[in-house]
Length: 403
Figure 1: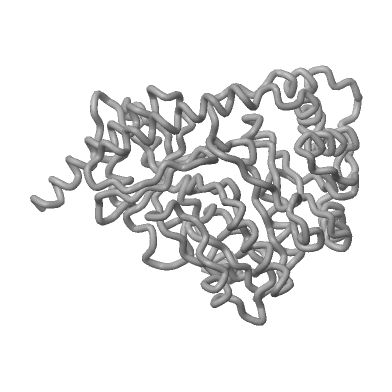
Figure 2: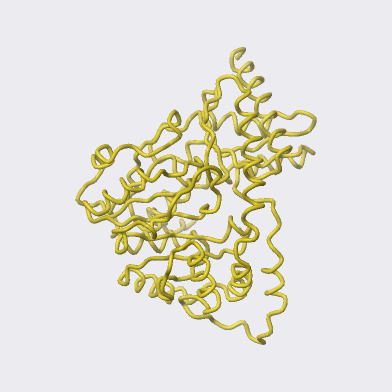
């Protein structure tokens, strides 16, 4: 028998999503009649606003043709107006539409770094950065943050220890996935000073911009001095509950960088036309959905955090943004515990799915007793999901002690 051709090294090291890896166990639990509370994935349960679907339904063109590689004009202009409402004036050519925030991140990595170059990233970080970096041939250099201080950034001096001749940029996520941390003004100034001193790009993932519950934060597009260094990777997925719409954007005032974004866009032809039509109608509605949405998520956060605080040995800080909590669990092996919750535990035919912590780190051995919880369910369901976690921890640790 002739063996199959060999795959690439890239193919062999591409990781599975830690957010989705437990899905087969979750599906098996559901097949047994168990209700699974999904705290593992950032999929909002809030309805997508009707303007999106209405615009798609009333689309009158008889051919769904290729659109402009930069994005269709009505959508690009709607994003201009959105940023203008944030006091961030942009030129039309400062925006290129992407297929979700994912393509924005991948395009940005490929534009600023050669294969083998390095990007600094603060861990824990959004797990898919690993996959995008592998696709781009880029090496992520992880810099640790600590749960005890709410996962805030280390000092500039500490960060500089990781800079090498191959460092091309630094990635920030603000508000942060998976920790919910919102960067303070002094931390943003550290990032600015670092970029200017070492001539680095700042790739800023600002998908959760609206999700700030106390205080406020700023975009890198607002920071003086970063006009040539700042890149925003954005998405409509979270702020409009539009995850399946796959609508994102890359934004920068760096003309050479944006010319590359356009050429990358031309190579994949265009983003989906109908989704842009719907997204443009939705963005044009302004911020009317944001205040009630943020109030709802604040309530969910408080409910989730309150229940976590009741668990003996649980360590977490109340996050100020996004809709995630990264918590240290009183278990030795979070991967095993998370799988056990789906395969062996149920209470009144209910259990909870978590996103185990190691997948949010690049440093081997970190996150072994941590998990990310996405408070995307209503407050009573968040409370019940964490209550099940608490009962599961008690049973799991008792079983381990007996074993």
